[in-house]
Image (cartoon, rainbow, N blue to C red; front, side, top):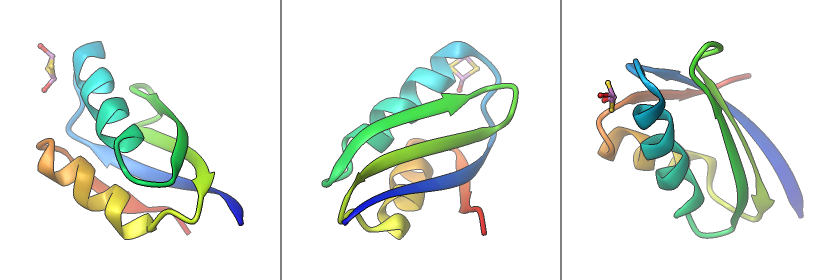
Length: 70
Ligand code: 9UX
């Protein structure tokens, strides 16, 4: 099933942070696309059958804080 998940991201201060988080999110199995906003401190992830918690883990491993938006 296709789905879209929004995350709140803390700790990004420049566009390189955005690139790191974007790459981390895109590396999660099942993710098709990820868009990260520095200003909005958020990410929008689209894909099929990915684990939302794996998105949070991937961002944390990159050194940023993430939480799933309701
Ligand atoms: Mo920019 Mo982000 O120099 O951790 S990469 S602040």
